[in-house]
Length: 116
Image (cartoon, rainbow, N blue to C red; front, side, top):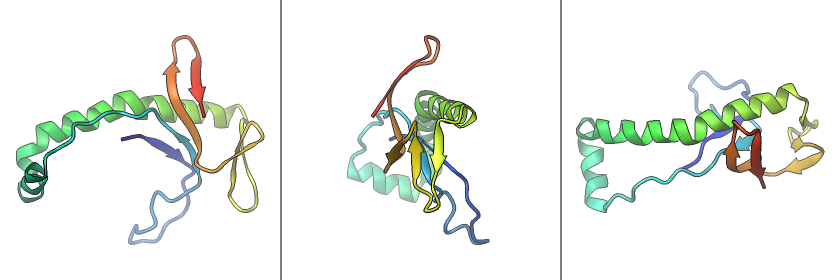
């Protein structure tokens, strides 16, 4: 599971096209446990029973991907490292990014990151 940062675009009132803007960055992958099929069925039927488990997964994603990806993408926007053409194609430091900047490792204290 990974977080992403997009350029927010207007969406319809029903929200069906929400979160569909141009992709700026995709955060580091966060491992989540593989659930057996019976547990997935149980989860669909009784989601409240699994709330603590689901909150743990959500928090793991926030800490290990969201909180790394969004601040870095905002910093890069502020530094002018992104560009957008007339067709909403995203460029990072002059290179066209089909799927946003892929952040694979990050050490914010040292100011180091690895991208693809």
